[in-house]
Amino acid sequence: MAAADTSRRLHRLEAAAIRGVLVREIVNFSSFWRSATFSSTVDPTIYLLAFGFGFGALVSTVAGYDYIDFVGTGIVATTVLFAGAFPAMYGTFVKATFQHTYDAILSAPVDVEELVTGEVLWVGARTGVFGCVPMLVAMIFGLDPSWGMLLVPFIAALAGLGWASTGVFIAARSKAIETFSYWQSGLLTPMFLVAGTFFPLSELPQWAQILGNFNPLFHCVQLVRHAVFGFVGWADVGHLAFLVAFALIMWRLAIRFLEKRLIL
Amino acid sequence: MTTGEITEPALVVRGAVKRFGSLTAVAGLDLEVPAGSCVGLLGPNGAGKSTTMKALTAQVLLDEGEIRVLGHELPADSKQARAQMGVVPQLDNLDTTLTVEQNLLVFTHLYRVPKAQRRAAIDRALEIATLADRRDTKVDALSGGMRRRLLIARALLHQPRLVLLDEPTVGLDPQVRQELWALIDRLRSEGVSILMSTHYIEEAERLCDRVIIMSHGTSVAVGHPRDLIAEHAGAEALEVYGPPTRLAEVEAFARTQGWSTRRTGTSVAILHAGDGHGLDGERRVTNLEDVFVLLTGEEIS
Image (cartoon, rainbow over all chains, first blue to last red; front, side, top):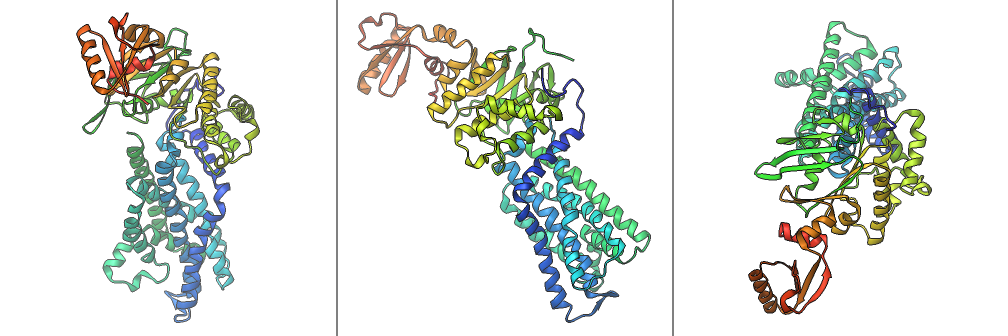
């Protein structure tokens, strides 16, 4: 008699399979949480301090905000990128190519769809937590607490889902880990700078402003700022809708392309 | 829902074809694993063994042909089939920074072992793989043989009815290999159906009820090792030693007599040689390797 209940017909996107993938991630995280936490939070904190002290000495207010308030909230988007996209990119590539972890998981009753879903949920949840760390640091330097800050982990987690999926997508499309440089320098770095984190988009030429509106990090920055300092109505519904669509589309693309890579 | 009557084979493959671009990795393979038996896929590297193994978990999708695993049609019902089978991969894919027990715990979840049975499933797998005293050791610190046993233990957590072993002893010391053979033999005696791929002749001879000799993506002979030897190589081989010119003469002579020969470096083995017509050589018992080389023209291991 088999120990597992297999008499039932198995479906797509089963909770048990996703839970299995999550358990694997969580148990593994116990062995590398220090380095993961360090890389996901320290980088953005350094940006915060560098811009906060360096730039903050030159300008006192930006777009109607004190500079520390402006950058202390915008920095959440940077953390989302560092905690969401990069770990998903490297993690997926290593597990698919070097450690053959996905071979093992796909030999169990788990499909690629469930595998990707479990992984991005986990990275997304982590991003929700990590996303708040530089904001907490900014509070030491004068960012005032507000009730809206309680929404920030959820916004970061939602954006984190999209960026984790993007990371899986990039890893699935990359033949070698060196290919990551193209994505990093060609796509992720420009997005990270043109997100309204360190300076408002309105200072940029018009074409850059238009492109910026397609940048998920920009919508994340706006939503976080408005959550902390007061929502502005329908514009924020638009930002939220953009992030939801971004996460859904990238989630499906990640599944499609990882399937192409893993199922021959 | 099939519950696997004795009569239904654990695994059936019919006319399997898989191409990768211009390369045909599997070329019309038929394969059957009767319930409760151990079947070996024997072939050199590149014969299509690993591709076949991956097709059985739907990680490779066939271009042609059909697969039924434990009564489930693949690839549509592959998940159902995977829930009842255990897979031991050729490449070690353990989580090396975790302990032995953590590795197993993760897979009790992936294999959906009910919560109340997880503890017992891990203990049982550790006992089978004789790793109980290594429970808290990190995989990094295990020897190659122990890691392989852990891979097997991991595949047994959910008490599968079918176990796939892809080159289970490749790269291990002879002594460690024998430990693994004992472990595989124990599974077989417990009624688990086994399909293993190997390129070690001795492994197939010892463990398998049936051997499928594979070459260039298809099966060239199927049968019990003993029967295959009797049929294709006869009872004894005459091994003639000598310098290359002498060996060439012996081969030419054998051809005139209609005998099959096999060159093994410093000698020519004549199969089905009868009394040998006065040829001077050493008589020895034939083996599966003779059959293999004869049928495929390829040397192995």
